[in-house]
Length: 404
Ligand code: NIG
Ligand code: FE
Image (cartoon, protein in one colour):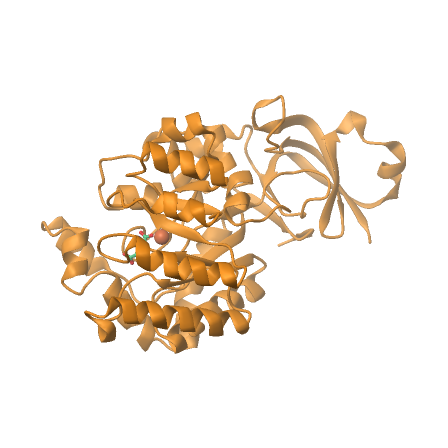
């Protein structure tokens, strides 16, 4: 393997136990061995023999380097859009009204089912490219707009294909229990049977990295979610949950009982829910785009999460109904302005804690032994990442040790 040295840079390592904020190292060096980080530290501490074994040297010209960004909660693969529903909401209808009238998620299901794989790939690729332009190197993509075997499979296959074609690591999550498809109207328990059947088949095809569900009065009950999670656990798949987004249904406690890697949204999270998440080491994934776009007024209980030591991640929730957003940097800003995270917490939320929310231990911080996924920013200080709106800072992304 060849060694590459990156020098003349400032590193925000984001290591959890670092003494400096952001794990900042001034005048730093970073050595990459193939697809792994071999060494990070101040340039003055770089061992001479390691320096001599480097056969390529990159001058970063004073760039700030962070871990590659991780968008740990997206529904990026879908057909159509919901601009008309946006208009309906502005004329007074609520998100839940529209869902109950058969619009909302159901209308995206229709558009996703009628799109062929190529068309779905084209439409989704546009969103992916926007995320990649801001330094995303790992991305979770959920199914959940197919809601029938062929269409859930198509969604997951398109998600995997996007990863293969674009130099980004895509993790796929099966969200069959997202909404009740029209052909199962009035028969939600029967649909849960179908979700279990789809899960077993898609898992056998190697298309599923994790399992998610939407636990809400307009979606699935805790008892139904429990059946999905029990099946996932049998298959040894990690689970995560859309929990307490519109009401408190005790989803966080339920997810924690299954050792969920994350609970997501959490505007209505209770004290018991937060305690259960802390005990289960579940990550709280905060989605300020959905909060903003639905014009919610109740923010997730950030202080409670801090008090319980629950790690917080931040994500776009990229989806057509509640967060048509393709900027993870904008989510950093909104996590700070709307939810009052500090810029350091926000950046940890798209690096170290986002990795944990996906159950990944090999990324999210700059440290020896981690994947060589990192971003060079034309910025002085990591707080600038959360500060600006729409600034589009110039980035160079290194994915798997190679400039992308
Ligand atoms: O994460 N909460 C459920 N699912 C999505 C929204 C889906 C939609 O409206 O299309 C979310 O907010
Ligand atoms: Fe979501």
